[in-house]
Image (cartoon, rainbow, N blue to C red; front, top):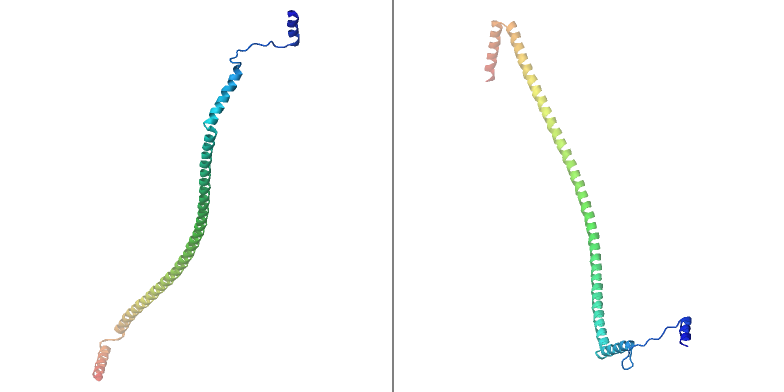
Amino acid sequence: MAEQAHSLNAEVGTVELHHEPAVFGITAPGFVALSMLVVVVIILVNKVPSMIGAMLDKQISKIRTQLDEASKLRSEAEALLAEAKARTASADADAKAVVANAQAEAAAMQAKAEADAADLIARRTRMAEDKIAAAERSAIQSIRAKAADAATTAATAVIAEKHGAEADKALVDKTIAGLGRLN
């Protein structure tokens, strides 16, 4: 019969049962279960879940505080961004005003420079005309003086040729006689 059981086991493929050690009827897996039960009871007695909950609540409150601070910082950053955009727009407007003012000043300076140049040209033209007129007067006077000298020289030569001592005597007598009549 042992042979038959052995062949039956071989044919069916069942596993032979082994004997496990046990203490007070509790095997190794039972001790593991009991130790886990004891750990769970200790955790519950020492109120570990409430401590974990309190720690989690504390972390949640810290995270909420950080989120609130982050939202405040974001709103401040948005306000600063809006202010910076406004300053940029103002600076652009100021820059355009400065450019327009500079262009107006440049146009005014150009107009003044053109007017000053026209006045300077007019003054210099008058001065040149005055110099030309003075040179003409000087040339005319010089020509008159030369003509008078030439006429005097020619008259002296003519008189010297045509008048002798007798003609001079009659001319001098006539002049002297004319002097007496003036008094």
